[in-house]
Length: 306
Image 1 (cartoon, one colour):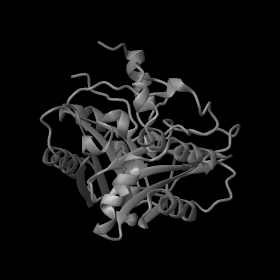
Image 2 (cartoon, helix red, strand yellow):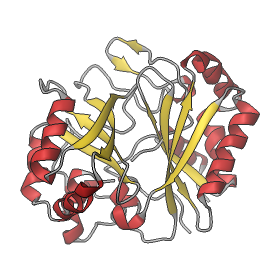
Image 3 (cartoon, one colour):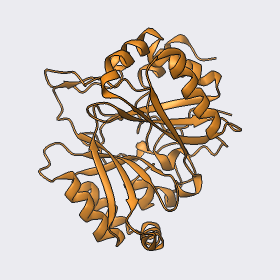
Image 4 (cartoon, one colour):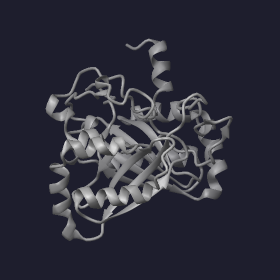
């Protein structure tokens, strides 16, 4: 049984994909994998409040009662964060992509970081796509993220892909840059349990943002959302909210036996009972075989101990 103090600390860090709380190290071959180093695993979304982000004195705040979860102070330059949706221009490129992806030299992923880019969350939803990533761009970079990423994919994976890059309203994870970027203690748990992971896309009318946010808070906010999620045998790891509202993604973990249909039912039922606005919900399973076996490959620490 967790103490109240532990539960309170957990609530304050629900949206942070931590690099520092791993309980065991990954095998050396996994640590050196380009897939883990370059794109360690997408993207979740607490139930989104599609209001505009409020900025004061250089700090970035989350929406509604999530505002204390991730807050950047004035002392450290803030990285820029984006969500990236990748799709193939042609099915003829699929096999070439995966061959290059699975044999990417470690030097390539190291150079990616040296260039000021890092991908903390990655979800490859099917062999033919789409792929979703959270992309961090180091503060002070003069590069255009879209141009850099497009060229990087073409140069290192040998294919031209459609890379839709959209700025995020707030950082969904603790910034990688500015900390000890080579700290080996950042490895995520390799606990091998039969939980499932899902990416949930949520769309709504931007005109409903204020009503959405108010109703979410009245319903109990993030704490109540995840309490109810646990009753449905699932957990929301983080909120990835597109700047300007209307689109967000939730990264869900579910106990064995929970299906995409169960996740869809939970979202639609909770939204219908509490938010009273129209929200489109689309659920994608995140295949383990394309994402390093589960939590560590996606970029999160497993929540359920089943």
